[in-house]
Length: 574
Image (tube, rainbow, N blue to C red; front, side, top):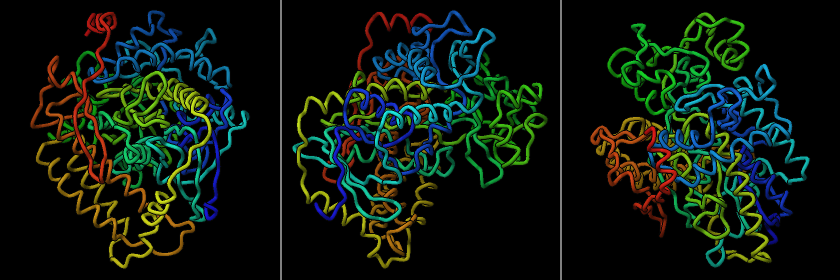
């Protein structure tokens, strides 16, 4: 092992977004020697793109709000697919996590009485989203970073983890490389927390940044963990569609929360056709499908979207409430949103599916592995409500950090691992430098994005999904022979080669899970199975992916049964 740089910790957290930071803070606070490892720079996490706010039943604006209503909204928004216990814990603990963030220095917008202000969002009964203008995620990251750094957590930036290390069926560390030098590094750990975010870069149009290459999902799956609900991929209804260089960049739901109207090319508020009660504040899956249908039926805007208009509001109000959106459209599209509508369309935004975990501790199905945030599954079910992700990060980041610290404490000294595992992984990672093929990882990435966008996108059919699945074996073969030139230093082509390994694996999981679920529910729409199996078989099972001997396995597991008193709460207004 002398040829590798080696670090030893009680707990390592992979990913430095809101979930990873909160997990590391909790682990460290419990006395575990904790390290945070991220493949980008600290502060660059995708959490900063969460703009509209964090959902928590503080009842500062609407006094009738409470955790029970938040729980019910989340269950109904997730189309009954979520883990009831995760949803209960989330609804109950979100208010305290918001107040804790405030105590740590987060500067929220205020009500006239000086309390944390809250705004409306799609699918929420009451005004529930605590916010900082439309820069809530940025403020969250700033606050958590300050707290974590002052707490003395060690941070390792620009480090790509390529494999989890195991011994006797237990995760005991991670193997990776420094993106700057290409040199390998080993992290020994008694527990590992996965907080790597999502999978968006496998789609052509996405709000996700370059880091979102399914790393955590793939690392956990290869280590023997199970993934659930991977068919549920959320397309946020409002992303920029023009100019081409910014296509997919998020347009926060806060625009609609503050009174923005959706109109088609004929000037109609078309949501009246799809959800006349909630209109623009319908759930994301409903709005995205409505926009898709309007464009498909010829009522779209010049660049294939629809109009989102908030120009009827006072200009100073817009600039105060939506400063990022004002500057985003002014600088990137030369559009003044105080006088003109925004041209928007659906963009791949979030995956509800992820690593199967124990709600209370974030423990995965492999000993020593924990997960939180977007790479974990169960919390959001078939469709995530806006604002629930930021409170999810805090609630389950804390719980995963605590769970990992307790596991590390109770499982004694570090165990060893097989050096042969590292050697095999090293050979796989360096293989692209030996190739003489004509194609590169970039070529394959473009092909994968087209395949997923066209065949596993917002509307699906069995034939399209089978077409995608049939292509993956050849894709994997081509990737094994893909050519990378230059050295290991500052080599983005080499970085993408391993990102593609992860994306191809998880793309296959998404496609197989989508083919297996023969109904339409939440963010999963099958044109050949358009009905939702309400109260039927498909409402009682979660998809479950495994990986063994180089093959993806796909099956179904019984969904945890909700206790009668909580079911009565949901059924009262379902």
